[in-house]
Image (cartoon, rainbow, N blue to C red; front, side):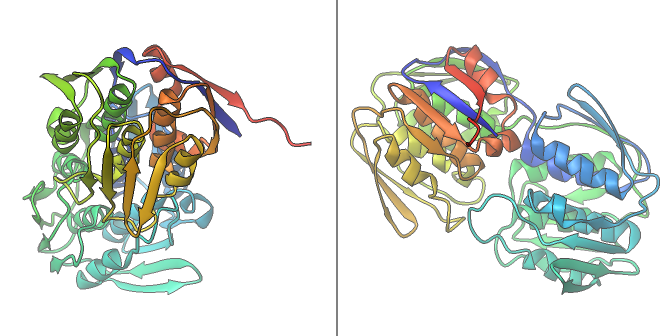
Amino acid sequence: MDQLLIAGGRPLRGEVRISGAKNATLPILCASLLSAEPLELGNVPDLKDVDTLVRLLQGMGVEASRDGRHLTLACPDLHTPMAPYDLVKTMRASILVLGPLLARCGEARVSLPGGCAIGERPVDLHIKGLEAMGARIAIEHGYIVAQAERLRGARIFLDTVTVTGTENLMMAATLADGVTQLENAAREPEVTDLAECLIAMGARIKGHGTDLITIEGVPRLHRAAHQVMPDRIESGTFLVAAAATQGDITLRETCPDALQAVLDKLQEANAIVDRDGTSLRIRMRGPNHGVSVRTAPHPAFPTDMQAQFMAMNCVAEGTTVITETIFENRFMHVQELRRLGANIEIEGNTAIIRGVRGLEGADVMATDLRASASLVIAGLIAQGETRIERIYHLDRGYEHIEAKLGGLGADIRRVAAPRAD
């Protein structure tokens, strides 16, 4: 198992290209199940989660070929509408095959999902929505077993905002009889990117990007090409890393419009942010002031950036407060940050961070994807060497992060873990 070694204390400087968005790529890959004709994708990131989902789709009958950032998927024969536990357990996004399978072939057997251990993320809204569209669903031996002769349009109110629930139901509705309305739908940019891909495939969708999405079902979808949006969370992570190290970096091929809440908070922390088309430059005016944040669904501050801001706040002036409203178990990085010398207290869903003069390198362990990113940022700040274990979480969501940071001047390298005697 690999580890990262970071010798901190160096400001990041230079330029970095932002990869395609993981959280847009995964549902778009699942959309390939909806058509017998090819789906050609560009800007696909080289990530473990992408590889895992492609293998899952290939087991169902999807043909896949990749050339760099380009990936072509085709599913002329969807012969196995099943998502087995051994693949689903590592990646929660696997639940996104459920809607397309039901819509395309009228049946699905999907293992209950796994993924990062950041709290309860129930799939009941997916199930309720599909049942409203006429599906018969049961839970048997850890699997969601679903059947439907043909889905039909329905008015579906989502009790809570759910990104994957919105995506699953939107995909299912593209081939349903009649019109489906999703109320209280997720407004995340990745949902919009999926909708644009489905529209290119022939779907009739309106209202994506708002909390009311309307889908008029069509008999079939066709061949299409789509360019995956840039990864706003990778973008935010690099911006925070630059601010935390008093650096000066420029992001290329990013998505400034999807980052407004993050950019506002960075400017509040004393950063200068310049936009130029699809590029962003960040540098600090002076001391890191730190910022208090409260996570909430888009367009508010994203939960996927909470851990990174906490790392930056560890060495900010004064006291900051971070409130997590999305996931109840997303402060597992706190104990590891304390090992580096951070002063953090937890009260329920709130973290109180009192800035310290500096962090000191230590051995730490990643617990989930975004926690891993926070530990990398903390390691870049800390004096001395930081060793991060269990970095397979990073490989799920960040494309070649050590190479990109190394290109910005960080002293970071990947090493094999010492063998136990």
